[in-house]
Length: 274
Image 1 (cartoon, helix red, strand yellow):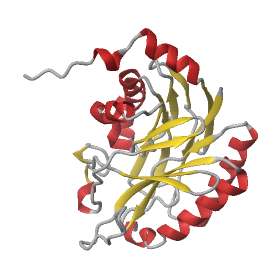
Image 2 (tube, rainbow, N blue to C red):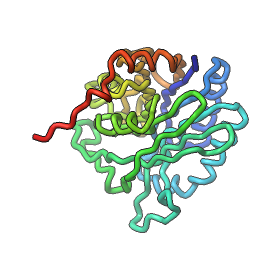
Image 3 (cartoon, rainbow, N blue to C red):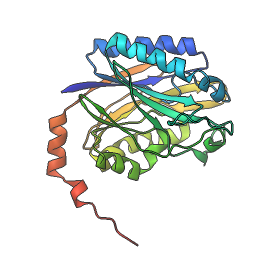
Image 4 (cartoon, rainbow, N blue to C red):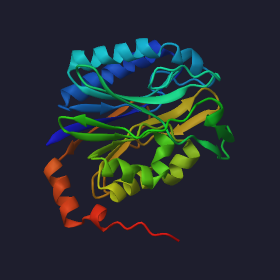
């Protein structure tokens, strides 16, 4: 039995203030005996139009997070950070950045996932339309990080709406799916909890949904409700409270094996050509 933590934050544009909250949540998670803590999207800096500015600090922020992981001897899924270069080190030349989720052990960064699905939609909230592809370059590769307590399939926010990604991560050995997110209030209210449960049910993985909550500036409002689903698709915990929150839940590897053995979905799956 392993304990895993998922975080809710109300990150703003002050990196130092956000880091104070980050370290406090890590301390709380460690005190509760967790092996892993998952932070939400934009957890170090949530500021529209400042992606390139924050991306310029990517390596120094990564180093600070590695130091925290080492200091507290805990694994960190570092929500998302904007990054100006691709996994191969090549710099993105058109002014865009990539949305990157890092999996960090107490020793080093173990894996990097670049968000594949970009949020180009019309929502009908105060912002109206979102066009992530204007500011972000999509990633192309799925990533599964190996840990002592199970393999983590890395996803980000809008990725949750694509079951084939969760299924592919499962087929590559994932036991846990992480979903750092900043769902809009409108879409989160409709679909956030449903998606946490659906992706867990599809993949028979435990899903950890870290979330931004509240107002970020004058127009951007996120839904929050950080939550976790077990490998059956049942909600273990979900928060209705505002602001910074920490949820710690058990992950039972043997129980997951039993769930998968009793309902062998991956063996039964058929690709149907229409």
